[in-house]
Amino acid sequence: MNHSIIQAKDVCVFYNDKQALHGISMEIPEQSITALIGPSGCGKSTFLRCLNRMNDLIANCRVEGSIVLEEEEVTGKIDVNLLRKRVGMVFQKPNPFPMSIFDNVAYGPRTHGIRNKAELEKIVIEALKQASLYDEVKDDLKKSALGLSGGQQQRLCIARALAADPQVLLMDEPTSALDPISTAKIEELCLELKKRYTIIMVTHNLQQAMRIADQTAFFYQGDLIEYGESKTLFTNPAHPKTRDYVTGRFG
Amino acid sequence: MMKSDSGTLTFRQPDYKPLVKTPVYKKKKASLSQTKTKPDLAGLLLKILCLLAAAIGFGIMASLMIYILAKGIPYLNASLFAWTYTTENVSMMPAILNTVLTVFLTLLIALPAGIGAAIYLEEYAPKSSKFVSLVSVMAETLSGIPSIVFGLFGMLFFGYTLHLGLSLLCGVLTLAILVLPLILRTSQQALALIPTSMREASYALGAGRLQTIFKVLLPQALPGIFSGILLASGRILGESAALIYTAGTLAKVAFNVMDPGATLSVHLYKLLNEGLYMNQAAAVAVVLFALCIVMNLGHQLLLNRMTKGSK
Image (cartoon, rainbow over all chains, first blue to last red):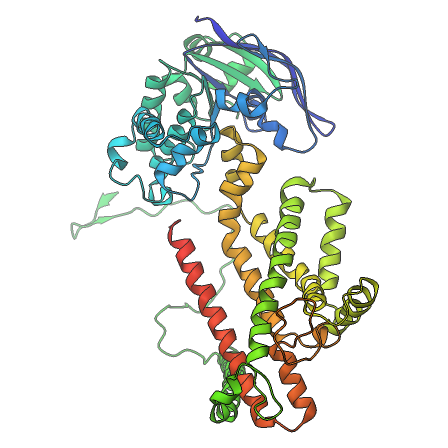
């Protein structure tokens, strides 16, 4: 395993008085793909959203425990915007802004103070290339992003996240709203991206986790049941709950 | 399956008896291509009623417009648009300029206040807070109050207490309060309609609240906000009761906002009130009508232009 970039320790999350996560501890190695699996409502998305503090946006949500990103504690008083620049996120449904393709991708860098036109252009093109979207849209950068197909929109959202120059990329079921071909493209893209970024992905698609994830974590009812190499977790799970889930007995 | 003598395949009937006898209902087969259908009387009746309602509605509106135009257009002449008002020419030019001035100044005050309040209520205040619901209830209530009540308040508070007297400013402030709930509510609704995913997308890229509001939310809310502005402008254009005792009925351009000045609607009220210039009053109505149309067209044009970029 690579050197770990994120260390979570005893992370508990409460919505009002309801506890959604019970002391999650896990280390996430850099430049790899980590999949979070589990039935709906098991807390995997909640955990993911702790990593870039998206839970801050939800009223009455309280997070306890410690999450360390490269020696820096992120649960306390920090510059959340800077954290989110370093920990990017891609959502379940493609959510491009109703702007041009260029402006979508340039949103992050502009936010973080890059005004120089030539520099912006370089970043945007680089990000679109990394998201393997550039060839499809290079002549339409001024056109509205809403005219793209669902799969293209999702890759645009990945490009938009990459343009902010993150270290970690969180993906919350990034392919669940896409067709199989678009899904395959995104999976291929993830394998390419893990050479430079750390990817943490929530997925309901077990095959997807098996195909592309280096590590897989199984969540159940707010607990981390099992976490380890994907191969082991899927072929030889240590915990009976994990076995039941990955063999499709429930979930 | 077995082959019958004729060589075609037939299915063997099961030779067991069903354990539960299912009752057989005799019913007529309903075919989609029935040639003889019972006439749907209720449906037909409803259709006729709706058509009638539409015809009445349209008829009333059309006859109103035609009546006003027919009455007023013949009396539109150059002297009605003279720069200064005299009792001979009863010019409406000062009133037109006052109207433009009033719409502009009122929006200048009411827009920042209304949109700002809407942003606070939608984006900053906690959704469950008592304050938010209180403001909503107040806005609901205020938009139902007769405008003469605003006129009374304006006269007493702005006119007497703040010593603004009978002035355009006094009228403008009164109108600003009158249209504030309208702008607040339409802006708030426009913001509320933007999906949360847009906010999430922006925040997840490390954008702060200010940037999210100005770069992502307001551009998307703009069409809705513009509808609010149009409604508010219409309200200002048509308002007379709230203005008579605040901005006065003087037919002179209020170059100084501390001077009184009548808008077109007030001018119209005055002409009708005096009863001597009914024809000229009809001409004023035509101009008001034309202003309304211009405003609507302008709004439509602006809206098309704005939404073109995002489609």
